[in-house]
Image 1 (spheres, rainbow, N blue to C red):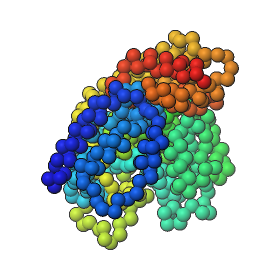
Image 2: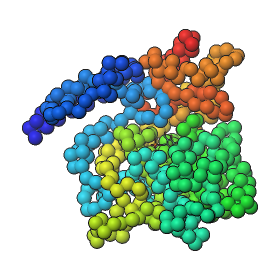
Image 3: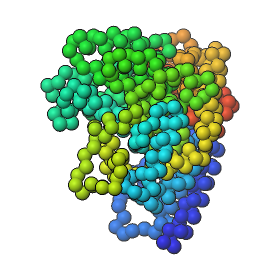
Image 4: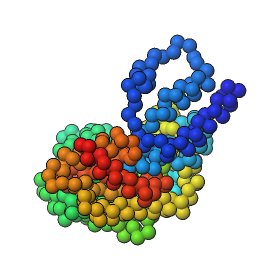
Length: 467
Ligand SMILES: Cc1ncc(COP(=O)(O)O)c(C=O)c1O
C-alpha cells in the first residue's frame, strides 16, 4: 500500500499534467509504427512489475497517443473531453470496485439519484426505478427496444421471452435514414429482422416526415404485420436534427406504438435558450436514451436508458437465480433486473461528480456555448464563397461541405477529413447527408473558441489544396 500511495501521487501528477498539456499539442497524430508494435505486440511479463515501472510505461507509450477528444479543436464524431470532476473520482470508483447489480451500498443508491437528475434535466417523467446507467446508448437502446418488444407481445397475449418470435407477425420498427446505427443493431440483435425496420422519409431539414410514418404504419397493419415501435431522434448524429417529437407521439398514441427517443447525443440540447419548442413531445416518449459520456463529458463509458414505466424493462429482463435472491432489495429490486448486465460498474460516481461539479447552470452554459459555436460556424460557412451549409443547426453539429470548385465535390469532401486530421491542427469527420458527401463538426468542448472555427475552415482549405 505504501507503493500505491507513492505511485498514486505520481499518477495524479500525470493526470493533471496530461490534461494541462493537451491544448498545446497536436489534436491527433498517427501512432508511429514502433509505438504501435510496442503497444500491441508486447508479451505478458512472467513476473509482476512495480507500479512505478507501469506508470513510466504509461507516460512513455500511452499518454503520447491520445484519440484527440480532449483537445478544443477536436470536432469528430460525438466525443467530448473528459470532465475533470469525472476524472477525479474514477480511481475512487475503482478503489471501491463494487458491482452495481444491486444491493445496499453507495453505488446503487447514487445511481438512483443521477438517473433522476438526468431525467429532470431534460424534462422526462421519472417514476422511481425509471431508468439505469449503461455502457452507452447502444446498450440503452437494447434495453428500451427489448422493453418495447416484450410489452407489445404481452399486449397481444403472448410472451416473447418464453416463445421467441417465430411464427408471429413481424414486429415493425420505424425510424428515419438519419436514425443511428445502434437502433438497427438492436433490432437485429432482438430478432426483429433488418427487413422489418422501416426507413421513414425525412424533410429538407432531415426530420421525420410524420405523414409518411402514418402511411407506412397503416400499410404494415393492412399487410398483417405488427407495428410496435417508432424511434425518433433528439439530435441525429449526422446533422443534429431533432424529429417532430410531438407529432410522432400522436401517431404512436393513435396506433399503440412504443415511442422511443434517441437523445444519446442531443437530448440535453433542450436546455439551450429557445430550443425547447424543437423538443416538444420528448416528455411523451416511453423511453429515452441519453448518454452522459457525450455532451456532459462524463468519462467514457456511461449511457442511460430512461423509462416512463420501469415495469416494462423489468418484464423484459428480470431473471433472478436463487443465488441472487435478495429479500432486502425493496420494491424496485436490483438494477440487474432492468437490463442485460449482471455485474455492473460504478458508473454513477463519475456521473454524479460531473453533474455536481457543473450544476444545472454549468450544464446550461456548456450547451449554450457549444450550440452557439455550431451556429457561428454555420454563419461563417454561409458567408464564405467556398463552403456550403447542408442542414439547419438545431444542436451543436454543423453539417457542411467545401465547394472550392464546381465538380468532384463528393470525392473531395470524402477525402478532406483524413487530410485535415493528418495535419494535426483540427479534427473533423465526414458523413453522407442527403446523398452527398458531407463534413460535420460536432462541438462539445467548453474551451473551444470562435478563433478555433476560423482555424478549422482554414485547415480544410489547406488540406483540400493538397489533395
Ligand atoms: C445519436 C446517437 N445515438 C446513439 C449513439 C450510440 O451511442 P454509444 O456509442 O454510446 O453506444 C450515438 C453515438 O455517437 C449517437 O450519436
